[in-house]
Length: 90
Image (tube, rainbow, N blue to C red; front, side, top):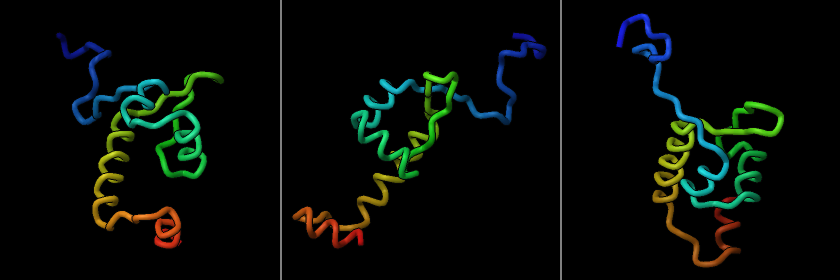
């Protein structure tokens, strides 16, 4: 590969990979309505719109969100009941 190959990323640029919505569902293990709610609430990385109907997510952002979610969920004890969990979050 020559140095003039413009398709190769710059050395300081991370490799980016777009995930289509179906890939996000599978990777994260959530469904459409829950994903849409998380995005609307700002609790999940915002999608990139390639067109009016095509949205994708940056894989690195999704993986970072998953790591952060796992780390924070392990720092607090799980609630035994939904009401207790709501009180804990309030």
